[in-house]
Amino acid sequence: MEILFSRHGETDTNVNGKTHRRDDEMGLNAAGKLQSSKLADAAAKHNVRAIFTSPAKRAIETAQIVGRPLGLQPIVVDDLRERDWGDWNSEPWAEIEPRLKRMTLEERYTFIPLNGESWKQMDERLKRAVDKIAQTVTGNVMVITHGGALRAIVPNLKREELTQSLSYNFDNASVTSFSFSPPDTYAVLTENNTSHL
Image (cartoon, rainbow, N blue to C red; front, side):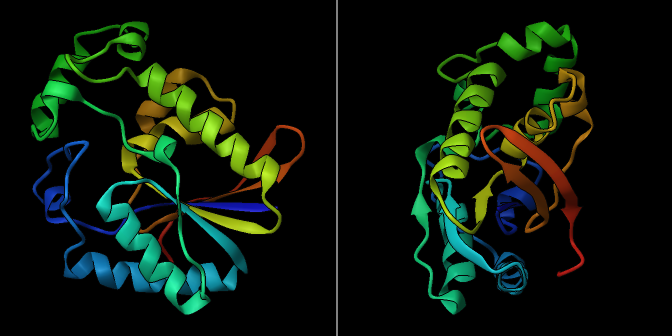
């Protein structure tokens, strides 16, 4: 079984370097829609049989564009959502990152922004969601999620040290794929692949 992870297509919020709110209704921009249509070609080449998506509008829209030519209706999984930054939502990442860099890695992992969630909480729910998909679905699948979510789940599946998460940066509509072997073995095949775009 192969699991293909993709960050949703581009939004204007991405272009402006800001974080999305949890309840953000921002959809894809023109570039994001084009990226998603090309992502559909990649999904077809990998014989994707099911598509799972974050509940965010930008992710659902991406998943719908990918699924349409394949005749697949995306399945929304709440635990695939982006990290909730609480009161920091909608702030530019350039303002958030310096605050985080003042913390140790362990402090960053467990820090909960006011009205938000910690990196650790996000990490745990993402792993729970991916394990459930891998263990209950037959055939290759695509998971549409977010940049921050991918920075958490990819090193988790690779069983890397926590610090490795900070070195990742996933492009919109990129593909990172793993082969899955029961009960809990994930082997990376590609990372941040944009050759289809």
